[in-house]
Image (cartoon, rainbow, N blue to C red; front, side, top):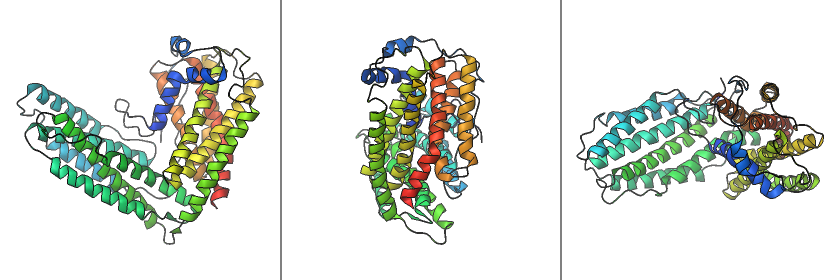
Length: 442
């Protein structure tokens, strides 16, 4: 596999960033300003935005090979095949030159059909198989929206059918969620096998909700009708993938026992561990302003602190959300990530206090940081530990994100170096975090 640029990459021209990637983008845009508010560092977001874009060669960051997927079973190709077949059938049902009375609506339907077809023909993710499924669910949603819009514009009212379909998929999701006893060969395997299942059940729940309602007069609002149809189609696809991944895992496990109790216990214990570790590290590093009396303006250290602090807050929030939602496999993985993020922050503060990361960044220093980051994540892959592999994913994504940004000529040099330095720190903390989580599970 080659380096991907987001968690569900499709092609260079058709990408939809994951929540983690959107978070990283937010760090790039506003991280320094956010940290300034709580640490007393002497800079503002406006200063950061005025910084010159990256002026280093496009190959300065390089690529990283993604390790084998930590999902403990082969993902059936048939799952993606169903999405592709369904998407193409729906697009085939829409003429390339729609015969719609409103010329503007006809032109927009035609252009949206063409874009959806281009996405359907684009390369899918080269990261992990579950990412390919995500890409195809989005494409299926797009195709359904185009078809729903066309049918509405030509006088077909799908409101009743859509309501019935929404009820059916909600029932299917509920039945699967109720039956989720986390049967697996071990508690650690349960976390790795059911985390994506929980994610898909959550996706289904979000998309089946009628946040976009089907209009009473679909001819007058065809695009709203299409969006409502597309969202339900996405919910159907997510429910199917959740069941498919669960079945794929269980089909390869002759002896799988329910692991609900150890997962619940571990999730609660890890939640407390994350909270205590975060508080302890914050106290030992000087509270919310470890460098309040120093001027780090313009240094890599300034940006590294911003990235580190916001990464922790995001990871801790993920743990709280997952536990509160009774997503125990997800909460276990999120806790491992949060513990590694917290240790990375602690190491970042220590290194800055030792006068590291205070240099003026350059092409050479960015290349060196990229080499260390790639070596750190490669070391995790070489360890043949599926749990650690899953935890190192944020580092893999960040290398891809920084590489894309440099190739496209935007973003600052110091930001690129800071994020790569953070990957090194984070990946180095992953093995211990994975072992800590595994001990609580087993």
